[in-house]
Length: 385
Ligand SMILES: NC(=O)C1=CN([C@@H]2O[C@H](COP(=O)(O)OP(=O)(O)OC[C@H]3O[C@@H](n4cnc5c(N)ncnc54)[C@H](OP(=O)(O)O)[C@@H]3O)[C@@H](O)[C@H]2O)C=CC1
Ligand SMILES: CC(=O)[C@@H](O)[C@H](O)COP(=O)(O)O
Ligand SMILES: [Mn+2]
Image 1 (tube, rainbow, N blue to C red):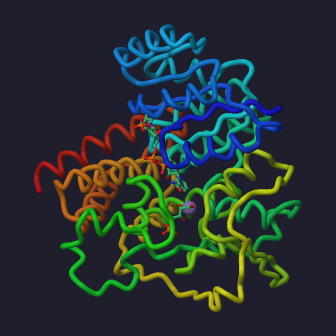
Image 2 (image 1 turned 60 degrees about the vertical axis):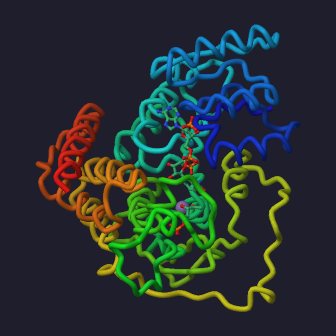
């Protein structure tokens, strides 16, 4: 029996993870759950999964939840704040942490989990972009596996089993293109509702906006380079509107290996949970005849400047990806609050990245300081708009 702690259990990935686990009771069970402030969803998850402990952000939420557990005769411990999140993450009985907190907010819990020698199923791509080199080094030192949950990276992982890195010629990362790939109207007038209308995936709000700007694919290119130890120059992006081919790996002999399925995050989540086993799943079987055609196009780097920014950040390295990520998180939150235009997102990220003075120190504190600086700088730019 594998014992899993799910960080971000009230989110899109978190809820799908619990859905899968509820159908795999003989193989996997829940040890801990963490949310930010969505106590309503957490209460229903506590009732169903009876975790040993949970964690929430605010002290008052934690206090009320403790009372609720006592009055419902539930023996779940309740932790609070960042220290509570780390305590939950390092609970001795957990075998694996599923990291699905959105944004840099998830970084410290991932570090704590690795130090406690927990395997990581990682959805939280922002943490990898921010401090990927540090995370991977720490994982290697602690003998910890970092298993991808992101659909493209799960695909690449499945296309790479038992292959030498030197055999990889390039990674071909597929992108749906988001809602605006063929959009020919004024991008500055794009509304929040339009940006949240993703053509193939139903996800949290932040990643959905990233898919619309194609920053998601930029983050994923960096994520692929870090997770698979491959130069960013070997990571290429290709638009594939059907989201059936989740990514491909081309080898030096010209062989290209791809992983296909209908778009459903339950598959990569389940694979990360059960790896190296494969268990049956209830995802819709792939019917290529019914699908009829799979299309592939070049990405438009002019229309989607975030793609260029991500490659620029990856090539500069050191603190630049952390700065780009933090500026993007700040700008996307501001767009979602209807404070800035869709096109301001890339502008704010670019100005923040280009103003930043790179630090070549690779300590965790350096990445955290770069993230902090970038958030403040981006906020200043937003105030000036
Ligand atoms: N959704 C998807 O299909 C995919 C997502 N990913 C990645 O997975 C991650 C999660 O995405 P998604 O599930 O869509 O996001 P959601 O916005 O749906 O969920 C985010 C989760 O993070 C929690 N959270 C946010 N801040 C904190 C905090 N400070 N402390 C504790 N918990 C916090 C939220 O809790 P609360 O609800 O209480 O605020 C919620 O449970 C992202 O990094 C995303 O890029 C990758 C591939 C696919
Ligand atoms: C499901 C998943 O992995 C997302 O990251 C997805 O890739 C988003 O779609 P885009 O290809 O539009 O960014
Ligand atoms: Mn993805």
